[in-house]
Length: 473
Ligand code: NDP
Image 1: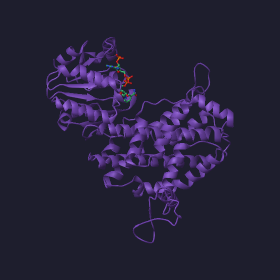
Image 2: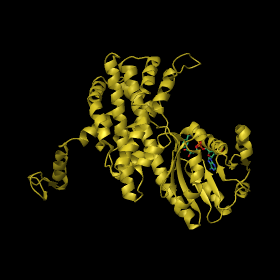
Image 3: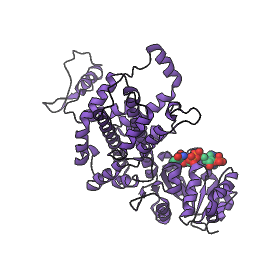
Image 4: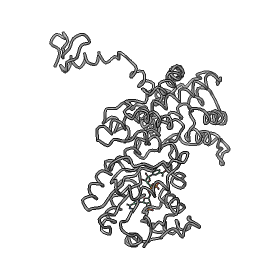
């Protein structure tokens, strides 16, 4: 007995979280379905091993804890979580807490919370971001669930979290579901951020004819400007790396089919469900899907020919600056969409998600950490009810400055046969949002003709029908 916490699931994330906890001085009981991993973790722990209590069964694991117990699950998202809970439950007592720290669908977290509550058990659904490195040295932690459970376990979660200028990147965000919902949107924004960077890479590679080393230099420069972020840093790193087998730049030998585990898609589904425009995120999810449809792409490019992807110009400082501004504007638009989804979900569900706090805990530890997040935190701290990031004066000024460049770049991209779906979706979103008059008057007319749905007029109150001559129906 006497461990502070138990962890089930010792794959990449679990094992690194365990070592992080041990390093911060916590005593951790560990268990994994394939029990060899328990001993492997002990070996990987080196001198930290004396902080670990290796367990070879659930019974042993539970016995290693004093009530009220805390068991953190870091297993594969989905049924593995339900199976682990079912195995654990008979051995736990009221007041004990189960934390699911995997990438759960937030609906599942709400369901699990309700079911555990009925047995007097507490549940926390906790989003953890930062990959292997983050788990080991400090991830961003987004918690939702029983407040009293967070009061008890919060200090441990805070201790293992990343720090941004000394402030821990861990927060309690609301009831069960809130933590995993925010993690989902984090990943949706991450998809858009990554896709937009890849689109700019495409314009540099195919539209400017730049080699990976030259592109690496540009991205490295951008790490010191307004785009400063982890994703830009690893982009430069990827472009700089050579394949040991062939001696070629590694990006040139990597198959262009991107994987996905679901969180990006869930973000898109949530946005559509809530009726919030999040095209930049949706386009990024679709781009991954299309990238994986390799056979279909091959067939279509055979029928219609490969996309032209002609030169968009020379790599002049002016054009490179335009690309930087395009990426910055695109990124702000994707964040505006992601935050609007969270604000709308929050209002709808009564969660009161603290948007400033969410931006704050994303400033370090997680994959989307960037200097922009500090500004976003500032914008929501100034006005928690901000309807859109685009209404913040600071962001409006950056966008006003970057927009001409974005229009130029995307004009060139489309004209010369390049695909830039996420950036283009971001730009369309903004152009629609700032339009006094869209073209949806015509859609209203069509709806009234075929379905007698009626329309409002700009010059008279009430619902009207058009003089369609009896064709409605
Ligand atoms: P995986 O998602 O690959 O899951 C593997 C772990 O789950 C192993 O410990 C495995 O045990 C266990 N497991 C699988 N099925 C069951 C089951 N039916 N019952 C009990 N245990 C089971 O591991 P990761 O470390 O990559 O991720 C863990 C969680 O963290 C996931 O939810 C993931 O989405 C999330 N996450 C991952 C990140 C990453 O960068 N990898 C980043 C952020 C979150 P066994 O060894 O016996 O197979």
